[in-house]
Length: 494
Ligand SMILES: Nc1ncnc2c1ncn2[C@@H]1O[C@H](COP(=O)(O)OP(=O)(O)OP(=O)(O)O)[C@@H](O)[C@H]1O
Ligand SMILES: O=P(O)(O)OC[C@H]1O[C@](O)(CO)[C@@H](O)[C@@H]1O
Ligand SMILES: [Mg+2]
Image (cartoon, rainbow, N blue to C red; front, side, top):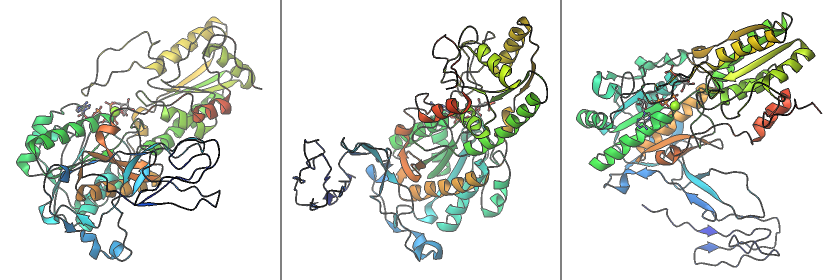
C-alpha cells in the first residue's frame, strides 16, 4: 500500500526556488503539478512545507501489504470518551524524527506514522486473541503497561481473549499462559517488577511462533529493551514468512534508555529519581568527615544516561564517569589529580560511575555473557574505590571513602507519576496500531508525539550518550570536571 499522493504545498523558502535547491536570491516557487497548491510568495515570512519535500516516510509494515484484510469501523466510534469528539488519527499524519532544521538547507528528516486510533480497523474484537510478554531486565512501569494494554483491549475494543505469557520469551512454549482481564490487573501498576515475570535468553523464534500459531494468538504485545525488540522483529519476520495474520507490537522498555529513535524509554525517569537517594546518601557521608569521598555506581550497561541525568539532577556530583567518555586515573589531567584538587577545595567529593564505564581498565576482567548474550561487566565501582584508596594512601592522604551501589533498587520500584502517564499512552498506542493492522512495529514518543516505528529501523542502532552533545557539555560546565581528552593538567575553572 503506497503512501497516498496528497495535495502537496511547495516549499517557498527564503533562499530556495521551491524545489529545495538553494538559490542566490528569494524566488517564487516555480514547481507546479496538477495537485500542487502554490502559495503566493508575497509574504516573505511565508514558509510552508511540502510534506513530501525532504521527508522520508519510514512506514511500518501493514498486514494489508501481504494479505487481504476485512475492514471494520473502530468500536471506539460508539465510545463516549472518543466517539463524541472524533479523536481519530488521520492515517496519513506523520511525525518528523528531526525537528531542528536550518533555513538555508533543504528540510531532511525521517517521517513516522503518527500513533493513535484510526476510524477503520482490520480486526473484529471477537476474533482477537492477544498475548502480552515482558522480557529482559526489570524496569519501573512494566506493570502499568501490562495493565493498560489489558484495559484498552478490554474496555476500548471489546476484546475478551487476553493472555499473559510468563517469564519472558520462553513462556510462549515452556509455560502455561494466564488469562488476563481488568480485575486481574487492576492494582498492579502500584507494584514494581512485572506480574508476568521476565527472563533473559530462551528466544527460540520458531518455537515461539509455533506456539503463537497453535494457540491462535493474533496480537502479540512484546514489552522489552533493545534485545527484546530484536526478538520481536524475528517473530514478525517468521510470522510474515508463514503468512500468519499476526500483529506484532513492540513496546520499548529499559532503564538504560538505550533504545534508539524514541525520546526516552519508560522507567528511565523513575530510575534517575531513585538514584538520587543513593547520591544524596553519598553526599551526606562525604560531607560529614574530612577528605570524605562518596562513590555511587549506577546501572546502564553500555549507556551512561542514568549516571548523566542523575548527576545533572543532583548538582552535588563532582565527577561523572560513563562508558561513552574514556578517562585515565594517573598523571596530569587524570582522575586522581582532579579528585585531589576537589578535596583541597571542598574537603569532600562525590563521584557517580556508570557500571559500564572504565571496563577497559578493570583488572579483574569478567568474561562471558548473560543468557541473552549481553557481555558481563566487571565491578568498576569496587575497582575505582580500591584504586583511589591505594593511591591517596600512597600520597599520605587517608581519604574516607564510602561506596554505595544501589544496583536493583533503582529499577525494582513502581513507576513514578510521569512514567505512569507515559506508560498509559504508550500501551494505548500499541493497541491502536495493532487494531489498525500494523505489524513489526514499535511505538514510542518521537519529539513528544507517539509514533509507529518499524522495528527493523528501531533496532538497527542503539542509543548512547553523545559526548559532543550539549547535555554532556552542561554536565561538565555544572561540575567543572575535565574532559580527560588528553593528559595535561586539570581544566581550571574560568
Ligand atoms: N538479536 C536477538 N534476536 C532474538 N532475540 C533476542 C536478541 N537479543 C536478545 N533477544 C532476546 O530478547 C530477550 C531480552 O533481551 P535482553 O536480555 O538483552 O534484555 P533487553 O530486552 O535488552 O532489556 P534490558 O536491556 O532492559 O535488560 C531475551 O529473551 C533474549 O534472548
Ligand atoms: O537483570 P540482570 O541480568 O542482573 O542485568 C542487569 C542489567 O539490566 C539492566 O538493568 C537493563 O539492561 C542494566 O542496566 C543492567 O546492567
Ligand atoms: Mg538491553
